[in-house]
Length: 281
Image (tube, rainbow, N blue to C red; front, side, top):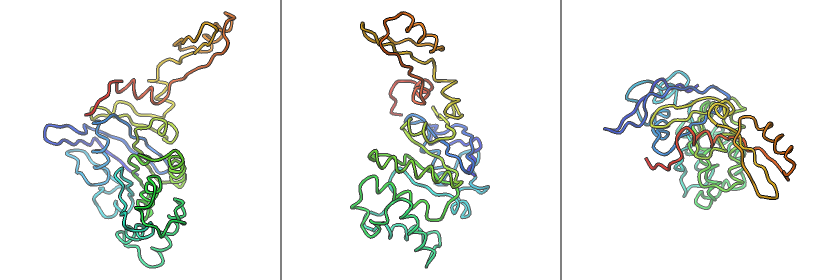
């Protein structure tokens, strides 16, 4: 549904994206992960047609993202909220619907359906300025869905929201995937990607450094498990590729009060691949 073929983008001497290739299929959530300055935002800009690649190509359902046909199939929920605070929730949806040529009963029905989808029906007549951060995020998503797109870009969709709203957005993303939409999901929260994404691409220094399912990436790049042994003398930690052997040895020693296994996570993979030093660019 969305295909990027060896896309590159530079701004003067700054190489923002260097030869990325990937695709996302209907009914799939593809996670796009990377540290600050890795090229995620530039990539999103090229996928939705705001930026033109220096080389390579992007297609949405076979058409360049700048074409009218591609835009009708593509919904974008940007990190910077694209809602008008002085308009009501319903007015926001009707405005974006009209941009895509919806009118009359079709426009009203689509807006009402999406208000129900994001659980904002009871606040439909209230101005967006009165909404919490989580409600504005849900409205932002609803606006991206007004033209009933087959492909959706969710750029940091849970930024600045409370745990309840984050859980709600997770559920909405899963429903969209189950409905056969192709979704690209960028996030800084590794637990989100681990829960939601069918596949993950890790980019760093403008190029892809790893791609695969979460389980495959953890298996390849997560490193050894850690067996934590609690005893009267305190807690000890053992890194091992064979945690069951380490547990058996700890229990055989006779002084273990409790043992547990800490397995690698997607966050471990991310840090192992991109480094643990904070980068601002």
